[in-house]
Length: 489
Ligand SMILES: Nc1ncnc2c1ncn2[C@@H]1O[C@H](COP(=O)(O)OP(=O)(O)OP(=O)(O)O)[C@@H](O)[C@H]1O
Ligand SMILES: [Mg+2]
Image (cartoon, rainbow, N blue to C red; front, side, top):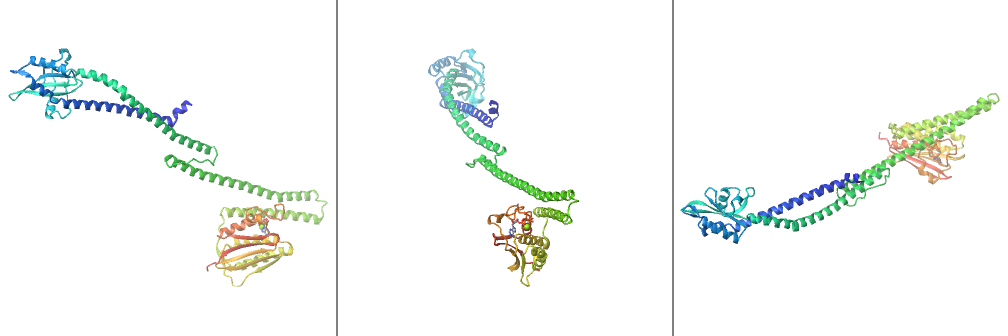
């Protein structure tokens, strides 16, 4: 649990954020202290710029070229009383210390650099310049300085360190308490506020991520309906929307595959059923013939063999139809278009069906006007389609009925109609009869077919870029209609 937390994005982001916050806080504290110090140093240098000059005017630092130790002593004393934060030095022309108000041991170096003093004098005290501090060579200090001249010659300098040792020790103490009292407390408060707000905001963002992860996981587990909630338009939502699109595609594909799989199972079931029936009947009759070989009359034997023959015919027809349909569905057969005469095709075909129709007492009528233009199509495939329609019309029309085949021109198309006065198709079955293996009026009627004829017919017309329509009324009759384009010769 804890390990997981330390591995989480939330923890990593928070850690980086808190470290950043601390760095900013530290930098801010340092800058504030530094700038306040500089501000104070510059202020005190400007205010006291002319202090050294006043001292030079007030006392005579050199008398007859010699340092005026007595005058200096009085000055040191007075200065100590008036302003204990300054330290006064008398320098010679090279920067060596000649007189000062501190005990000897407190002075660490016997001279100071003249460069800062010259810079200070040149800018007339308007620029912040730090000079050597004889008592602590590591911390330069703000100062005031003035040259002591006589007859145009520089004898030395009065050098005043502002904010001397006394000032430093008091300032340090006050600074610490100030920082603790005000600065640090304020800084701490604002850091805590920033941390709380930042962490809450981070938690909010990572919560969204966690929710998305949950959804994706659920999808992965097979809940294909799961989608990410997309509320606004930030980068995470864009990711969520992209995931949703992807999920949609995957869901559709999976559904398509499932459907195809179900169809495949159904086809296999149908095929095996349709193969088994004729095989079983063949097996039965063959066994009978073998067993009763001696006792069978010539007529009985003939009957049995006939039945066996018709079963093999049914089988080979089924296999042939399945083969045809699967090739059509895989688009392996493409129509070889050529101009041909539809009336001729109709006449030839109906002539072939006449004997069969006569057997069941059905008459066939052909209605074809003269002088029709040729159509464009694959004559072999169209013949196959027509054959299926005629076969059905004769098969599903009872004794005494009539089958009509009519051809006529409709604009740039030639329309062919196969109509019968047969049993008709119930309305609920109409949308389904073009499906493979679909037989209206149950599969029990061993009327012969496997239910593939119309599926093949439809595929053939689709390959020609055409469709087939059906109209039917139960016990009145059925009408199939399709068009083919006029060939442009
Ligand atoms: N002219 C028709 N009159 C009445 N019903 C029909 C007619 N044509 C087709 N049907 C119905 O449509 C179903 C499907 O026809 P289809 O030609 O595809 O299969 P089939 O004739 O049963 O078998 P197959 O053609 O494969 O030998 C038929 O079983 C039948 O119920
Ligand atoms: Mg049929």
